[in-house]
Image (cartoon, rainbow, N blue to C red; front, side, top):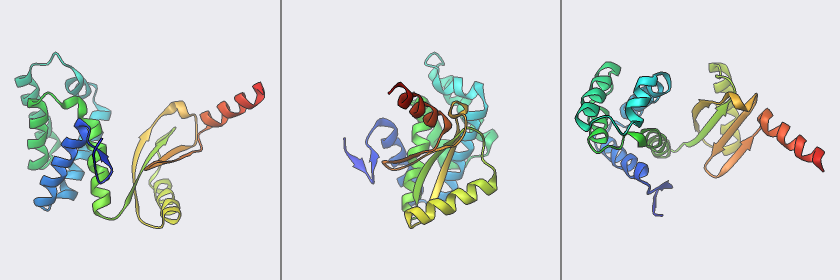
Length: 184
């Protein structure tokens, strides 16, 4: 598949690229990125919002109205609000998490940063995030932005993905490795 700066030309990737280009032209990349982070957090915290974005049975007009109301409640910027309306109108709300990840990657590259997807067993404190960023900066030789998520199934430790590199220090992986070694 074609790529634009490493973003796959998947449906979500194409939408992310279009939004990024709009934000870049309007000189509002940081504003749109902050709005998308707000939407991502709302998706994580609200079962109703997740259901709205994932359900194919919600009528198109109702989805547009509901999503625009959510956007107003969240206080997202006009570009992001309009973009969410377009996604709802085109019945592409299910792509929203992938679009948000791809947009963050594009924005980080635009700033000359690498993006690390970090999954931890428990939420990280601000101090832990700062220490992680410092270690990743030393390893990569440039600034690194982090996209945090939580997966209790890891049991402990972290899984860090930067591009095609993966650092897996999770307890789950260590236990699986030990179990495999014991089977011999």
